[in-house]
Length: 139
Image (cartoon, rainbow, N blue to C red):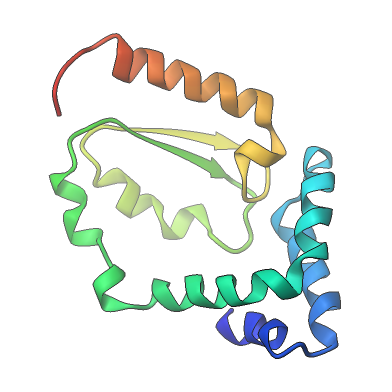
């Protein structure tokens, strides 16, 4: 992914076409079309940020998996089950290590708050009301 986004940093002409195709696989629903088009339009300006993000994923000091078992507060995971790049099956083991997690899966691509915003907001509000507001436990 770093090499892909680096072609945008380098302003290679092929980047825009490939970035368009990539984001059509990331944000897959009709609800996401407007936002997806905005992102695609800004591909060259987003490329440096995306290179930085993907580089950080492989950085040892950014790996916080060892901290998972120390987290006791409620954690909400919302997952686009049709995500072709951040696959649920590769991450479910880490999710299950959290002591107090809620997992909500959506039949979408990558971003619930963009692809199904009404459902996401409802689910987020229910999580906050149930896990955070109704039980004033300190974590």
